[in-house]
Length: 323
Ligand code: MN
Ligand code: MN
Image 1 (cartoon, protein in one colour):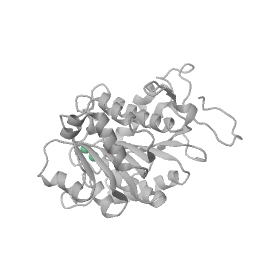
Image 2 (cartoon, rainbow, N blue to C red; image 1 turned 45 degrees about the vertical axis):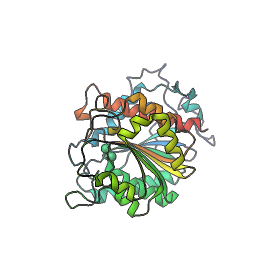
Image 3 (spheres, protein in one colour; image 1 turned 90 degrees about the vertical axis):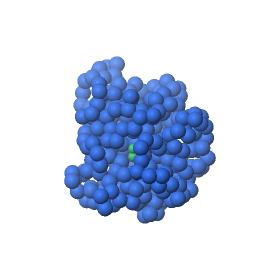
Image 4 (spheres, protein in one colour; image 1 turned 180 degrees about the vertical axis):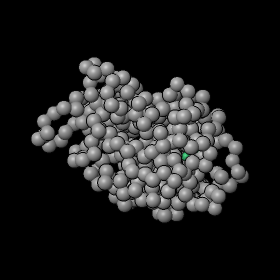
């Protein structure tokens, strides 16, 4: 769908510019060559929102450049999702909202600005797909969601639980957001599930903590043994019809496919397994998504950004199929 149209129309269907008219490598980079729109979001279904914050990183940093690189890689996205047979932008009005303001080095002030910025988007009834940023942004994302939608369920694909209470005696890092989200009452643990946990951990408490907090956990080993179809059934059963936030840590994918991330773990999932899993999760009551932990400086041939751009595209297809 062309982005042009009658401004007087009630519902403007925003979509990408036509890549058969202007080639995909040309132009200013927004996600999938969508229009950059920051005002009058009435009638918009989905907004791509950059959150270029990486002060929560505990090992590698540089996810502040994630949104920029994911957008650049996303120029390859064509408008028809062949995997599910939907013309995404015929069904959904989608914009690129640009980036939220963050303050590098100041996590609590950034959390305030991120949450306030997201509330602005959510109040229009828009579903944000956020581009991180490290995973610490999940806490302000969930604070904003709680303000507008109340408590939500969580689907977290990640090789880490991110439910430590503190790191270095500090509460807010990319290893702690879901601990605080549950403690603050932002997340409904009985409607929440973490999938893909693996790798060396500090102790057996690492997987016990999220379970004791009431969340379901499918470890990486269990997910491999179950297969994606069975994992999808467990996720759908867990979430039910509750409002749900889908948080995709790119380290869920094996570093062979997505090396440019903060804390890579081997034994992960292929890009096809990730696509296969996400595509089985249509019809849930999604209120927000994110893709986090892309650190382009560690990338090879932009592979990780390209994977992230495609995961965002899978999220758009999920929402388009529900129309
Ligand atoms: Mn994470
Ligand atoms: Mn992780």
